[in-house]
Image (cartoon, rainbow, N blue to C red; front, top):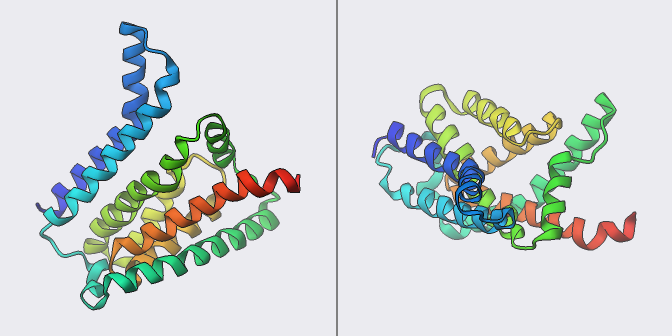
Length: 223
């Protein structure tokens, strides 16, 4: 599979997983009266299938990615260890970006995107799997391995990283530009550090899981 075909199929899969459940549920509701309460199970199935397909595309790509040049000298153990360390790094970057953004814009550190996600999780814990595991896997395979990989081969690492990080911010439909952009940059650097997408996947999954646990277990006692 060429790089352009790989990027096309990954983009198509990501888009279908992202928007397919809502469209499918609307059709099922209109024609068969299926209740909207099936939305979360449908999203979970779509995300699991999407992540599985995108992972399956990895060995089919025959074009070497420049961002993965260090993969030859990186063991799976190194990728996992740096991914675990990356969890703390991304959390710290997110915190610093929040403080800087708040001092410049006066914007509250709370995120409408996070608040909405937590409201869904509290009503249906199945959504935790989407947010902490399969969602981050798909985002890393799309924003990092697909977009950064594709544009990195043509324009170099930094232009591709800036573009993919900006699109990462836009995809979250949130006003916290610096927070999501900084996260995108950090995850891109973690990916390049080992040349294995496993590193940024672990860091992203770990960070999301940490945020969820903070919201569910600690914040009720701090407010």
